[in-house]
Structures are given as C-alpha cells and as structure tokens.
Length: 178
View 1 (tube, helix red, strand yellow):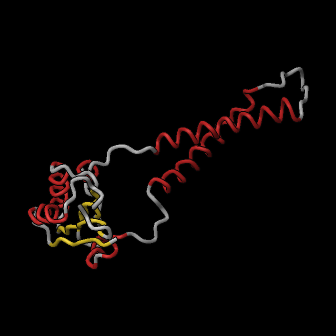
View 2 (tube, rainbow, N blue to C red):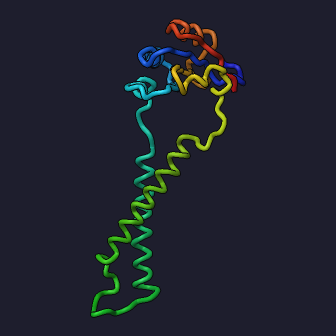
C-alpha cells in the first residue's frame, strides 16, 4: 500500500530513447497509472504509457450537433412562430435559407465544446501539480525526461516500485509528495 501523502515515484532519464524504453517496460510490468514529462515530443511515448482513447471527439460531436440544432431552431422559431412573413408565396418553413446559419452554429458549438472539453479532461486550469515538489523536475523543460508511476496504481508498492524503477537505470528516482 502507499502512504497517504505520496503522489508517486518519479524516475529521471537523460534521453528520449531511455524514457521510451522505460515507459514500455513499465507498461509491460502491469503499471497503468503512468505519466511522462519530456521537453520535446517523443514518438511512441503516448502508446508506451497507454494513452489511446479520449472522449474529446464525442464531446465535439455533441457540441456541434447541439449548436446545429440551436441554429436551425432559432431560424425556424423566428420565421414560423415569432414573425411569420409570406414573401412571394414562399413557405414559412423554408429551410434551405437557414443552412448558412445552421452550419456556422454547428462549427461554433463544436469549437466551444472542444475547448471546454479539453480543459475539463486535462484538469485545467491547474496551477499546482505534485510533480513540482521534485526539485529536479524543472529540468523537464530543458533536457531531462521523467517517468512517474502514481501511487493510485493498483500494482504500486513503494518498495517494489522503487526497485523496479531503479532497475531501469535512471539518473535518479524521487518520491513525489502530494
């Protein structure tokens, strides 16, 4: 079991290849609550730590669909219920004229839902994160690569996990206090 104030264990690596290999071995060892921090994009790292699916496309679709429905409803209500005008024998429910507004509100609804969904799914804004408690973590923006196994992981055991991370030959292994 883990201590209550322990967020996890973090290992520091010197190269993208080392952190990618460590992430792959960590996933193979059965750890699922893993996070990686790198100064540059590392190809294959997202797959190695198990980041495969997100709900963001579904949120975007729902936002776009609701925006389109809102745009169509506003046009319909204005032309059929609120202020019906008979212009040249045209029917009140003349939907082809509403396509631009419906389209624009579909795009607007999808965009707003995407931004709000992305912020919510990423837990942002988040001015504080426990990994900032590790002194060497500031190097993650310049030239070091970090792999963190969270204490919430079902396979997390402080002693065994620390030994496992040390077997990956990192520059150092640090406890991350919550």
